Amino acid sequence: MDEIITNIEARVATWTFFPIENGEPIQILRYEHAQKYEPHFDFFRDKHNIQFGGNRVATVVMYLSHVRKGGETIFPITNSSLSQTKDDSWSECAKMGYAVKPIKGDALLFFNIRPNATADTSSLHGSCPVIDGEKWSATKWIRARNFDIPHKKLRQIPESKMLQLGVDESYTLKVSKPKRKSILGEAIIEANTVYGALRGLEWHLDGKLRKVLVIDTFNLGKRKLNYCCLLMMHQTFSQLCSFDYTTKTVQIHKAPWSIKDKPRFSYRGLMIDTSRHYLPIDVIKQIIESMSYAKFILFFLHNFRCEREFINAQWNKLKYIIYQILAKIIFASNFPSADNAGINVMAEVDVPGHGESWGVGYPEIWPSPSCREPLDVSKTFTFDIISGILSDMRKIFPFELFHLGGDEVNTTCWRETPHVKEWLHNNNMTAKDAYQYFVLKAQDIAISKNWTPVNWEETFNTFPAKLHPQTIVHNWLGGGVCAKAVAKGFRCIFSNQAFWYLDHLDVPWDMVYTAEPLDGIDTDSEKELVIGGEVCMWGETADASDVQQTIWPRAAAAAGKHVLLMRKSITLTILPRFKHFRCLLNRRGVPAAPVTNFYARRAPDEPGSCYDQ
Ligand SMILES: O=C(O)CCC(=O)C(=O)O
Ligand SMILES: [Fe+2]
Image (tube, rainbow, N blue to C red; front, side):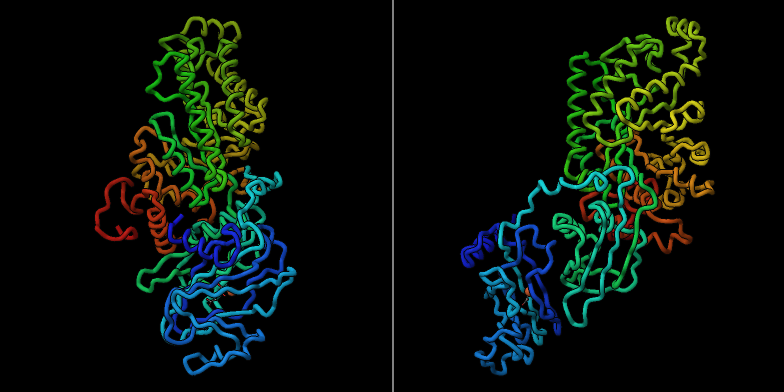
């Protein structure tokens, strides 16, 4: 923490005799000409606000600027107002009660709660309008007890409110107009879960820039959520605001406003391909964190396998490396940002077509050393290994879905390797039958470990009638697949590569936005089976040096579709918001590329702002 703040807090503690831990974080207030703070109490009357640290026993107001006239802190109903005589250096407002002049360097201490723990209504106070000058003050509210939030409480949430597929993410957000001349506006967010609150606080593609209201401070009013959520809200609330360098004010656009919203889809994913190039854990963490800015809920770790550079390693070494990678992922998925940002992590073991690397440790699961994929369907040992890997992974991936791949299965190896060929013959199977046999066996293993299987669309395209009815079909090859899948009663994830493959650098943001997961689906019951979509960041052409600017900002265009219905004329309505969002990402340290820069990662043409390039 800032050293100056620490010193101020220490002095306040010494002066007031309240321990530092009882203090809330300092609030800074700025009053321009004619602005005031309506009389109010600092103590709380509701149970909710006092659950962490009890009530606000005392208030310290520190004056940070000289005000030539006005801006006095006034106590309108205290008895001591009679004892105070005031000349013309005081404002008319100040004459209405006991008042304290804002003098730079002074501090005012008053008590809101009596020693017998009852509320002291004579503590009613406000700030008189500033007549000449500008008033800056800093408030420290002091609680009866330690204000630290007990972390254990954060965990005591019912199962239905925990992060999972279909968690209630609805929210209402209201930003009121501030009362005339008062510096206070009010923002209220109500949600049934922490994740609803988070979504409510994040960027909204539809947030049009209409009226601009300038307010300096926020009074987060009636709260349904407990204080821990409020803190998160408070942090993220800043994201609805922008700082205007000309007026030096924080601005909230389009107030008053009232939004009642929930995402269109419960599954809003971003896939990262960690199998082709090494991505350091810090980059993975940054990606997870930035996903929440665009209301994503799912991070899909494509094909969990060892990295190519280790492919020739001995098994022991490989095992060590695999566990190291697992440890990294555990860290990534347990990293507070994944949970706090409301991001689920889904992993994949892509069998039988892309499982070659697992055979480095157990070469027996390859049909032969020279023909390694698809994995050997003829041996029970292959399935023992898959089962072992999945058991290990189950311990670290709590999310209910697990991806089993099943794409791009070229059966040449099976048809040409003598012992596999013989096995096919003995079992009276074609290579296609064996593909089905393999996928279904892998599904059974995943289901036995209490996972819902997700498979790439080839499995559905090849043997739709045989797939486990719980299967979620993951589209990628082209359009119309989800329509077919839901017609057969399967759930579906939309990732049409023509629109939602981020490694297709020539797909501009508006094409990403134009894609519609529900295209070609008419009935409501079938629409419901499309659980959402996923943008895919395949790794062939990206590594840590450019992966984030390939993801952002285009991924946000897809995320926009996840939460909004299609609009006409998106250049007028969505493009400005989209540019705004890319600036926001840049400000938060995310290296998002310019919005309309073709090929996404090319350097900007113009020297302009982050908004216009
Ligand atoms: O700025 C002032 O004088 C009063 C501030 C105040 O009442 C508060 O922050 O609770
Ligand atoms: Fe106050």
